[in-house]
Amino acid sequence: MMAGAEKIVEADNSEAIITRIEHKSRKIESLLKQNKPVEALKTALEGSPPVTRDERCKSANWIVVHRALMAIKNVEGMFSSLDPEYYDILMKYLYRGLSTGDRPTCDQCLRVHEKLTERAGLGCILRSLADTVNTV
Amino acid sequence: MANPLKLYLTCIRNTLEAAMCLQNFPCQEVERHNKPEVELKTSPELLLNPVLICRNEAEKCLIETSINSLRISLKVKQADELENILAKKFLRFLSMRAEAFQVLRRKPVQGYDISFLITNYHCEEMQKQKLIDFIVQFMEDIDKEISELKMSVSTRGRLVASEFLKQFL
Image 1 (tube, rainbow over the protein chains, first blue to last red):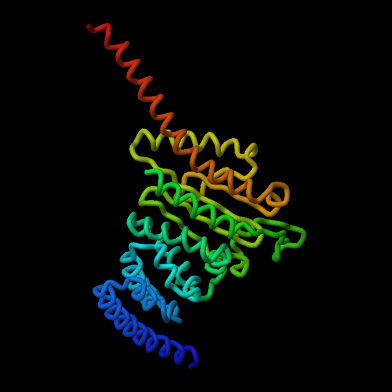
Image 2 (spheres, one colour; image 1 turned 120 degrees about the vertical axis):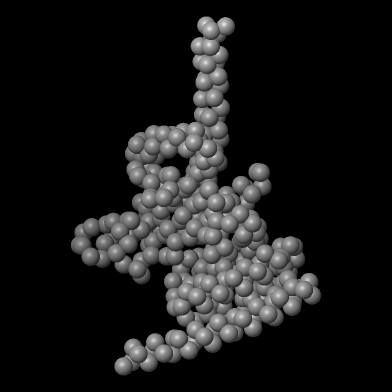
């Protein structure tokens, strides 16, 4: 019975999460139109990673973060306005981007990775490797 | 272009520096045994998230870490059939002599061209920075070697063909 109840909670959760991600996506589109890529990235990273085991939610969130990430042209400038609390979650998404194999994504992720490592250090990388619970 | 290559190697270097923190860990299942956990993957609590770093569709690097060992698998760029054959032969040549390299794995992981297995014993005997330098240097040199081999094969082929066809002139 407990397992059944948990499954129902998961399903509700997934729907709620996907709706939230869609809201985020609309907000990000409007921020990008106003030429504020760093704000867009912050919005995308908030509430990430979704606390669920549903792959669709994680993929949906990744798509939103990817959109914001690819819109960033000035990597140095981005770090001057991004708060350190976002560094760890950004690193996890960078590794997800690097695993896609798509050339423009990988180029952008490699550029951001180098600068992020300079800022956040090796601890950030190790935290993204060691966190097997909150994966993206 | 050299710049994306440099970024790719920097990313791999940073990831290896973070991931290469290995310590001795005797096997939990069998007493008196000491096995590289990344190869066996019996206990999930001893493994870290594997990380795949792609430069583009053709080249990638998989780094898997565990508490006492680290496995790095590389897929090198192979633009055409000739490079495919040359890379396969050359890397097989190296893998067969894995004893001499110590950190090389005899067979590459499925889907990759060459693999390295670094254990805590290697980290104790050798310096961590030098190991990482070795891996990154290896990646740089592999591309150069394969282009050199390809050029020498084409040159030889051209010479042989022109000599052979002279008799028909």
